[in-house]
Image: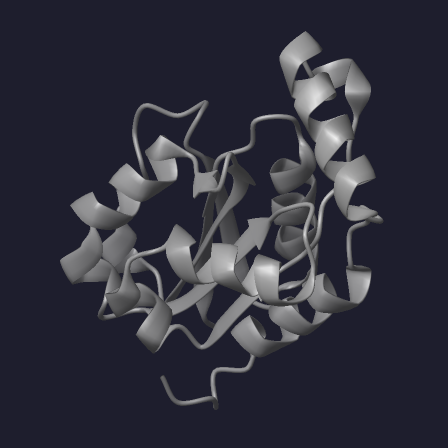
Length: 165
């Protein structure tokens, strides 16, 4: 049986929601690690696959995700990797954010990379976050939604260990 670790950081709950859905959908033994709530990270060498996810704020993924990737880069390069982001954009802008979120060495070897979209829960935003997010959505006519189809496809791809890295 294959085992997978999902490592994520969630600012407003959307990434955690996606990570928990992946946890439910991925075959085999699956563990989950919220970097914002854990001081100790599970032993990465014991996992076959590692999924890393975070959200994009002001064009960048959370610092804790960047630091995790850089600190563990050598070990991660030898694992089956899945990378995801949550962002309010779709298409080219979302792909650009996905490209810039993770180190090139991880992106190049990932068996799957995806953006899941996003959602806005105003109760979890401070005044400035609400203001800036509303302006971005209005200016660019964005429809902000999560893609259950992309999450499902991501889980199937990570679960399929016949895929070569």
